[in-house]
Length: 426
Image 1 (cartoon, rainbow, N blue to C red):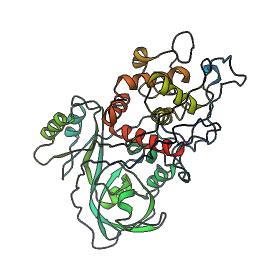
Image 2: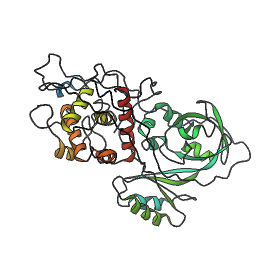
Image 3: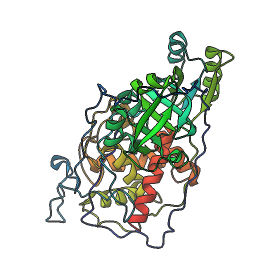
Image 4: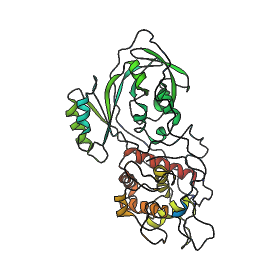
């Protein structure tokens, strides 16, 4: 699935102005300490890297209204305006500047549910054994170790940028500049660690000391989604710094019993192996609920109306902002209908087998429900969320979103964006 930069809505339907402003959310996840790398007492080559992976990744997404496919729009006898184009609600908080060099992340974003490590490195046989465990869908070995960055101790991992990019949170995966810089040898720092390490100036070279001393520019500071990891370098820089090869492995296992899986991984790694759960716990605040709807017989003329009316008609009490966040994250409000690598289709990215159970004709349309038609897809998403417990308090909403896409980061991303929509359209 992917994110996209949405344009500003040209028509805004009033929502509950008395709704409280969303409060902060808290997140808790385990971190993992990496073994210390024996550091050089002298300066290494310190050369400028020439990476084979320097080409820009992704492309800047267009801003402005996002059109709905004209062939999907039903006729509206009550209005003369053609509802074939829907304006998208704006993403982001009011007054917030646009993200730098933001493009489209990979169509397949992989969630790191667990991280496992062995101080001396994980063998290929062990990696293969972990990949074959029941419930494991993807693994990514990374090099790493504790070295010095700008005179301070830091946990740094070495990765192949193209492979690691899919394992990062959506906003980070969409940051073209960060991945171009990482490919060219720059340092990608955790946003939380940049201040701690004194990394305040993007483009400025800082001394990074491992097996050699490398003057390394800071390419970007971003959310890495990996507690305990302070910074990332590419594979070439990792080799120069002497980071321990395959010291850790990221593991994606959606829907599995993680406690049982962690026990199995420890058996594979032996007594020196350490396994940590990276699943995030999210506490969300109340989100606004729309209290208006379009007249009977009419259809929504913009994305906001579609999200609001779908929530009210098919899951009364559900905040429309949740549907808006899902629609933005899944397809950029219809900008990319797939198919995804998992075969998901349409603006709400339904798997066809799931659509067979939950797809409905919305807004008085006739014929077979169309997975690619927003007037069917958005109401169907509201209906499914409702059945999964979206109205059963905070925990029920989180679980319903988790059921929609079995990933802890997805719950966090949806609730965060929903809160931003709630603030922008109070």
